[in-house]
Length: 264
Image 1: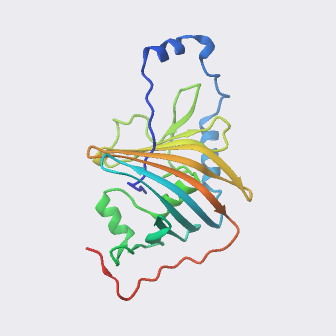
Image 2: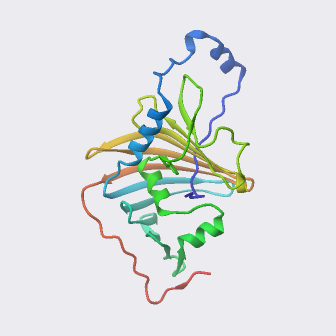
Image 3: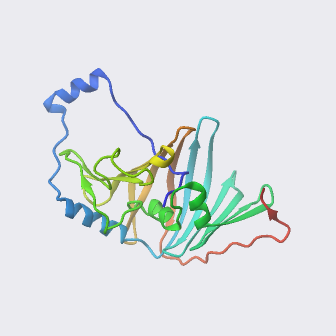
């Protein structure tokens, strides 16, 4: 599953001064404790299996591309393995509402007084990659997006990071195969980043988890940066969880006003 609105900030340091520092042994980072590949996969599996039954959160969102830069607030509710709902507000005024259940994506556009209902399988066909509710859940819970414990993974030979990929070489795979790369934090308790390479349309999605929080026994992201790069555009999204409730059950539903028409 992929959500093409997802992206992360990718930093490249390629200056002579950096190269000089790297050549200085005193500035090298410490080598990480060795981690076997099977243990790496087991940790990703454990992270993916840990999620609250209910989640209510408020998000501060900043979006930027070549055409605009905007900020808004989002209220997000989730019932694990069931449904997600979101309300997007500008200046405290709700503008969009959305509900994703096991089969459909429903969006209400309050500004234009219209609505749309699309089947997830049709969205998958339109996007060319799998679009599933579970993928959005994985991103907001800080899980390894697209992870499958039955998939064969390949660990990178890097003593300074815990990195594993779904493919050994990104240029040695079928055109439709999506490449997932996961970087585990040095504390081995949560992810540092996820990279998704979609060769079909030359799109790359990078998600960087900047900080984490603990609530009611669950570890969840606090701040995230997402970058999406494609031949047509680059999008950057910054997310900050400003409120979190994992205890109170929330009813998820969306009522389409009778006067609303289908969006064009």
